[in-house]
Image 1 (cartoon, helix red, strand yellow):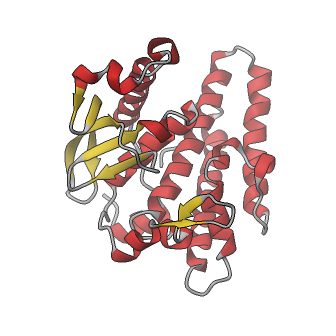
Image 2 (cartoon, rainbow, N blue to C red):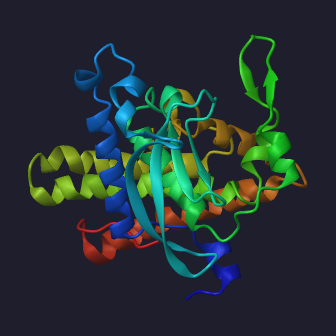
Length: 276
């Protein structure tokens, strides 16, 4: 086991193959139960009223390694119909992951998968304490446009319980997509197309790492588009004495990931991703 300091500063949280499989199983169960062809125009809460508990509808459990307790734990996942602005949450106190249907169901399949993984990273992380500053940061405020946003993106994204999970979620999705490209290349079907996809993946990541200005919109790699608000917060504060360390740490971790992909290709050809 790596020393705590080394683990935090040089690496990111990861999911092992069993944890990844369970995330996929939970996602597939959700998609099967809440498929439009199954629900139709009906209220899903009424469709599954016989399965409804105080926490919502149970869709599976995930066994995982908790880096705080150094023990294996099991956490249930529920679909909640509570009217909240969040799309998903993890509660260490209640030992539960909740997917809030009203927001969660509008997400893309890729983002749904990443949200489940994101909450699992929260369950796995060393530091789980919810600080007063964090609670204040996620309070709601009304914008001039009439939209509602959290009170402080900086206070939210750079909180000690949130920042490492944001980074882990991004690298997790990057690695998942890169491994999928490699799987297609290895299969031999459309090898030339997928090789171009691999090269494009690395090229966009290299451009992002080299650019001193934040790349947004269509110029962002697909695995970063869903995290644009977090990335914007990093760049807005990159010259701030108190918060610049997060920008530097983020770039360093992504560069470390990029270098490992290059090294893995040289060492093993195109048949494996990297081990975080």
